[in-house]
Image (tube, rainbow, N blue to C red; front, side, top):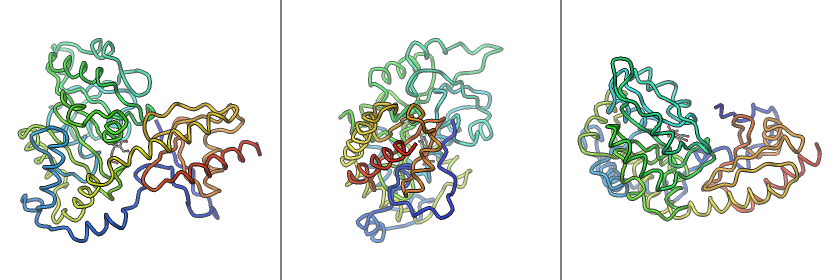
Length: 355
Ligand SMILES: Cc1ncc(COP(=O)(O)O)c(C=O)c1O
């Protein structure tokens, strides 16, 4: 499940069109001003007013009792599993889940946890696959402690789990005694694309988080929400892992700015993704997965150029994308305009023509 940017190209022009990831966004001037004006205190002792406000805002947004500010989405996932599960426990997730392939084995290394990968199209498993994976705790079988899903499913193509599936999995999990967790690295993309509010979307789920350093455009930070007891347990792990901060209001202010100004505009990113996909679909031999949010996956082998060759050629023209398992991934975000999409399409056409 390798996410591979092109290798460094000596002499390549600077990146002008950055479709590598929505983590590439730069804080806007207005966001930087909000950061400079932030009221601050000591976050570790609960005395940073801006961080406290951010936590309250996200707890309300996600319809949970409490929330905690963490440095990254990875730390949201790791502290959530460590706070919930015991060594030897089992977590059920999709085979392509970030917790399984992109977090350095943290859940096994730090928590002694095992993750059972489920299959299914587009980064999602069905309710039937989930039911089939459930088993009792016996002398032989591990205790199934948690089910985790990604909304949206990154490697699945930025796909949105249907609300009915989310609700059914949550209900089935609860009945079987599992805790439910949503990796919401791009949850707000799903919210904007579906029009379902975040609290409704995550209602059946014990914990959920949103990332601010992706499409929301902040430089750093994610907020994990759940019950008060859960957040207390997460705090302990945050402290243990060195995730407690000091005057974090400086960065929390960027996140509050993002909540106020960068959510509705995610619709622009989705429109840009659709425009890119529509242009690619018109090129002979290019296979495109219909985008649901801000990620566009496509294949160019059918047009005579491998994914790796395509991203290397594009990088040579100042356009930055990545490959994932042979597919090319383009990610739209705050710093990508409609003109950049047109120019990218132009470059792809020229590269394929030359091949
Ligand atoms: C689905 C998913 N979960 C978790 C993360 C981790 O977030 P962070 O990079 O903030 O640690 C990512 C990052 O790309 C992601 O795509």
